[in-house]
Length: 412
Ligand SMILES: [Zn+2]
Image 1 (cartoon, protein in one colour):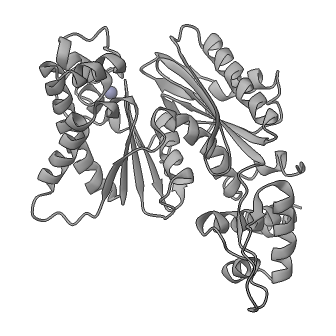
Image 2 (cartoon, rainbow, N blue to C red):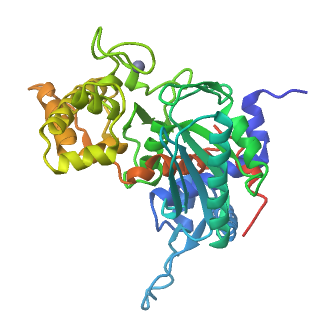
Image 3 (cartoon, protein in one colour):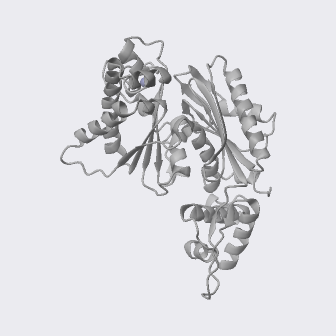
């Protein structure tokens, strides 16, 4: 007999338990120091159910009891619960346009291991293999630190199809229709990561999750993360979820068109935002040539010695960035814009110019209350966010039901 999907959820005791467990973790994550009684009040679960679940979560390394100073004659205080940063680990990797990067994080997003290599992609197989080797090193490092890895997230510079996790198109490395998740899975299955859940996501979406999952602003205000490097993309978090759109292609702001008949973009169109706001664009503004693209190190060195052409190029990109922020502000009305990716290292000529331009477009009738700031994880943002995606998926078991089944039977 086949059950109606809505009945399946309530009939599945194991899923129900996961939903309740993760609700408790989300609450403690948002409000560190909540007691068991507080959790019962917030969730509507009975105190005895909460006690049993919390016991399990402590045993598995999700939560720990916070030390409290002894109260003097006031009776026993409820024991505050906090996330346990010492037992669980999350692996994150970035397949960058010209580098590979991998990190291992704890439950608080603190980096326990990181390794970055400059890299030029030649064959897909080789890139996937070398990235997997780096992930294996991070995995080994977690184990030596007595952390239990819960999964691997990988950020890639392209569009991921929601239906089958294929990389549809990565214009800046020239990859089309690559079965990236399948290939990574096959490589990881050869080593210590074979039992770990794997997720692949767009690099800007990963950046957005680095801020949302591990950042200080734990609220549901819409967040837009801009990843500005050789390419340009955005990750959008709306209502506690990464907003992916109908096909997984939301946030491709780099290929919104800002200039009719503008320069040719890596995607084949003309005048995309990416041709005006990117490392490639700043480099072209300076040299007048599409290639070679000046490295970030070179651009930063030129800015710091006050090279006029580079300052002008950076300012020009900043003006277009301000225009894009204005447009995104009017489309999404976020509470927070986070600027990330290598190009933000150009500093005020880019970032301050963008802010001023955005404000100037706002004019008298600008009702937006938005904070704009730089990302907190710097060059590691995408890898940390890919690790954050592992945690984010575990914390939302209804949307990602297969995840925790692979990990919940193990305890520390
Ligand atoms: Zn384009």
